Image (cartoon, rainbow, N blue to C red; front, side, top):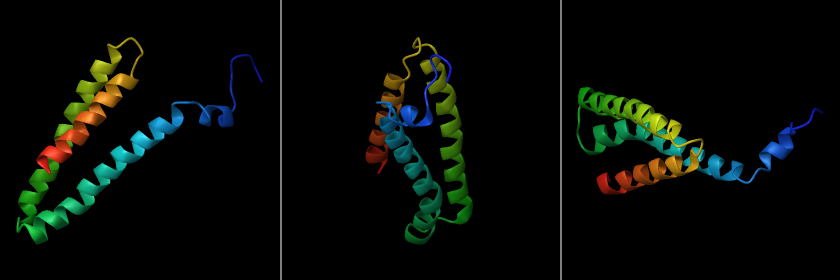
Length: 101
């Protein structure tokens, strides 16, 4: 193997891989929960019609696109230190889920 390259196993054992995997799981879990369970909850439990539920989910997705562009720009300006930006974004996302409940 050439100098400076690592194997897949060495890459998986890196100190930040488990943290990023946990964060990714949390983000994906929340996205799927919102997209799959929110229409059911809003429609059957709270009485919203499907047109209104569709509008709410569209707003969620549009906000996500804006957030991706914003946080991507912020992380690009942090001189290669993306972990603090990711931590702040995930923390703010968690807080907003609890506040907006």
